[in-house]
Length: 117
Length: 343
View 1 (cartoon, helix red, strand yellow):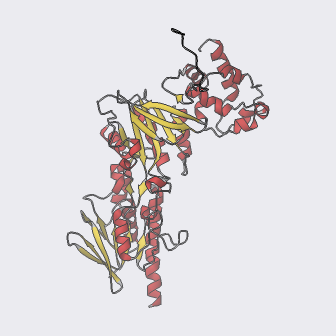
View 2 (cartoon, helix red, strand yellow):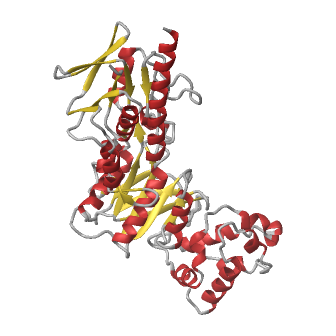
View 3 (spheres, helix red, strand yellow):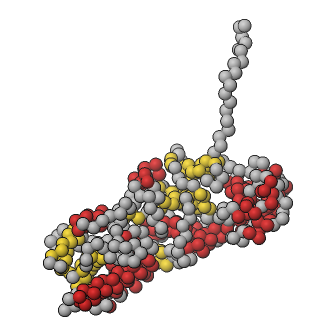
């Protein structure tokens, strides 16, 4: 028919870029949390926290990874992620660099609640 | 008449070995290709891990040279010959000396960063090497080409090291701790500047190195990202855009920096290989010289009377180089002791 265009489905879709765009990402949560709990700077990503983590035995929760995501400003889904932590504190006992991991979780909670996002 | 030893190269190893040999009663001929002794240290503003001035160590090494050490500077040794159980050392300009033994302390050369074309050294304005940054510290000025102060600097570890494509599969040992030292110095110089280190592994092997790494994190907020730079590009504003994988997150990462510092590694210098091949010495697959035994006789070559000290047998820090130089002096003393006992 004149004036109408048939919709053709080619079976393709566009994926969102997987790349971390550091310059474009907001680091507002990281700024707040790093200031409130500076021992996060000491993390060497060894993974001791994640391996001892009770929540990590049953879910894909990893504190090591979460610290990095926050630092890079990759905070999408962060609220759901930290809800997996039960604040048992085993990670804090195991951390070789003395990172105050429990307070880190609490500070992220706080930063999210105060509407930093 | 006491025995005479020719020491080839007046860097850290050559200086230390010369004074050690003199104190053991030898006469020493120290030959340096440049006008001044000191090798790479004279271009290094501060040393890891305590950031003391390089000149401090250099002055200490130079002041130990006694009158038994005859220094010839501005002489590039091009020939080492064995003549009736002795050695004859000669330079390009016709200078010659005879010696009973020769100690090679020819050191290392820095990797030519422009070989890693994808990193942009010599192409983009604000890509420099770790050696360039030391010169900037000495000059007391860290600025971009346009004269402005950088707001974000990236350090790339392992440039020309652990890289088969660069022809060097070995680790240069000292670049990791140098990057940490320089990152701290940048923060002391420009407290507002953000600093990122891109590393494959953090090899903090020496005493107080791990502490320095911790200090960099704790006091200076330097960020360490585990991932090797694949390529850098310059955008229309002159910013250098880096592409690395954030390997601990398993995601590609794009980040812009105002200045990029390439941590260049150590290589066996051409002159060592040239002298070595003429003497029939072996080079290892890493092109550094081969010791008679890596553990037991590291200072001994396959040629009687010819010895090694310092980085001509592979990357070393200054403390290890000096220990190696003193060890070479003892090896030489032992060599003559054994020979005279036999005769």
